[in-house]
Length: 469
Image 1 (spheres, rainbow, N blue to C red):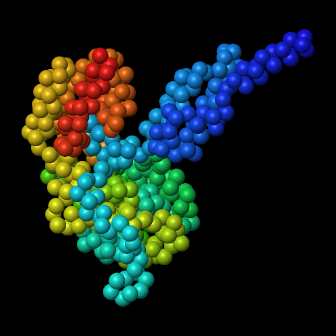
Image 2: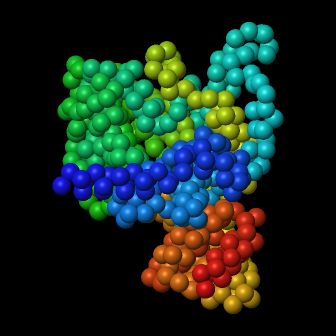
Image 3: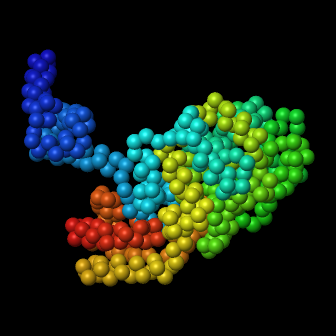
């Protein structure tokens, strides 16, 4: 019995000894281009991974990989890793603020404008007039104050961080009054009650899910109350038998009891959304005018910028927040500030609709989109690709304007294979092209695609279509 086991082990050891070492595999000339692209360290990791899989395969099936199989496996692993790198994606999904695609896209003109200030050194915390240390983000904060009509503004790394910082500064170990209908869940599974708990503030729920009146807030006020929090339902809708207290009402109540009113707007817009055929979304300046002591919102949603969170409002409160030790842990870098500076200047100059990509998409007339869709279709038909257009709707997305859509003209493609395989091949192309699937059709919405990419879209679809035919 023991001899049989020894024979078996010897055979296995002999089998495993035929698998070349990591160093020998790395010397293969075919891997040189991959090494230049990914680095020797990355390639070494992939080779080790493949060897580990090969050993398991040898034990299970009684044979190692052939040299050809081994190389194929290494290339597959690296290709998968390469697709994980941050890269340009063409968004034909029909969602403008796509959370998984970085929310608000940044335009070429905007990035070109900030390129000079980001090359080399920048006066991030240096006062050029005085020749001494300056304040990080000072100009961005001034621009925000001008836009929002607030006394003071601060920028942090996201809106969840903004609300956490506000609560931890002004309501630590104290009560915060919030309507039950506003205890929302934001992106990534984070919930307002959980942020409240982590900030060491105590939640005091008032009203019901669908109806909360000013008297509900007043009944809850006691000696432990620190502030009143209003959370805008920016990522869902409530219709029917509903009621919520307005900012003006809450301000009167807060003034009576000497309590600050905090408004978490979530998406945060400075433009009137009804001007673009959408329902009214409370603007930042509107909330400040209504009496909110502090307003916070995201910068990568309806503002159209990079990830960040803004806190604006009364100086008496924002000064305390800026002096909190956690403010430094949540601060933004020079890249974010440079982009925000350019975006805010676009708003102040009245150029947001022509310079900020999301507003260019939102404001684009249906007639222009229809012409682009028709042109793309005609060129694809010339290649004998079955395609047609039909009316559809574009979602705003990204936790903004829930249920709100804009009319569009969709491009409908009948792929030569299953729509799942066709969709995957388009995702694996360089650059990836994303759309959506509906029954046996692949659908593209041009509203979220930059017009300069239309010819590239035609090229990608044509390449993949005939590859799969």
